[in-house]
Length: 102
View: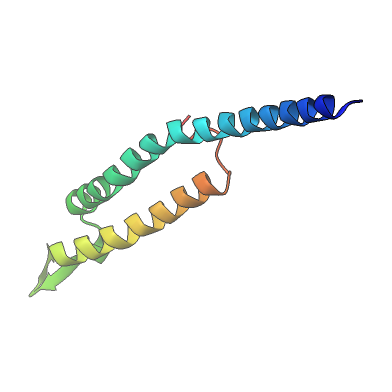
């Protein structure tokens, strides 16, 4: 086998490796905007759900009745959103997803 044939074989192997990697990168790039959209909507949906459902942990006692606390709602929204973002990050970047952002 001549030196030119060896070089050609190595170039073909490198080309096939590059094509395999670019296919994986292209798939991840398509999924990223969907994940960003989901991540951007999570805080708004969480805040709206906590605001309108009014669970006990977002209310404060005012005399004899319980009233909605916007500050508690905000802090719970922040905590829940960060937790959901962490889960989405783990699903996306550690390869545990097959349908998120397909």
